[in-house]
Image: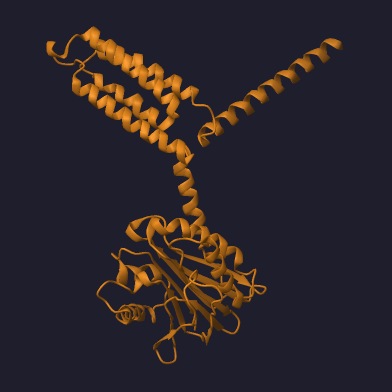
Length: 381
């Protein structure tokens, strides 16, 4: 009986040891991916490639040239910290010296270490060290940097998603950053409040465009998303204006338009902070009407007042919210751009506006070097 207990105890200790080893290995792998772990393993692997390449250059020079030592240098720039990278450079320099002595002077024939080879390897090492120092200063290694940007882009996309609407309503939205980039200075936050009866949408255009405005837009979208629904509708722009003023940015202003829509009656209020007017299509008349509230830019001065304009969406009516990149361009009047937008939108009145937002941006402002955002809200007949 005692022998059986001893065997079970040994097996239990073995399982615990294997479990601890597996956890430690997994943790080290995760830390390395995040850039928090040691780079000893990567350094060791790259150091082993240096004598292998040196041997290949000496034995099979027709396949491996002396400039092949650039390969571990480039890999080290992406994988290693600056201090470890210097050790790899020393090994590569030693490899070049060995190749020079074994192969002889470059004047004796081809496949030798030439001054050009030394310059190429040295230049690769110089730029690799710059990259490594930049990564060390930012604190985001290449293994994690791309993942972080992808995660930020997905968070912006999810945060800009419009909530589902009840039967009888249809919404469309399209965001197009400047220059085909993945980040934009235009963003949308939306929520259904008042027990789901009220739809609140805020469309904001941050000063600047593309990547220059993206970091501020990301910060503001998170702040505005937290404020929306937590405050009475008439207090939202006041709170947003105070938030921008507290940031004290050199280029910290933004325009914003806040829609508060009753999904049962179709009545709405629009509050604007220096934003372009919304456009409403009346199904009864077939005409587009500008709807705009009164208010200054966000982040300009404290104590600003934002006066709403009221309207109603009846069955068949359409409301469009958009940013200036869609209708403004050098040498063209603003009203001309809005007329062009409504003219293109008239084509969808009969067939419906499903998928229209993306196509309208393509038709009106396809090659404009500015962020463009368009939101369409329809009350179905």
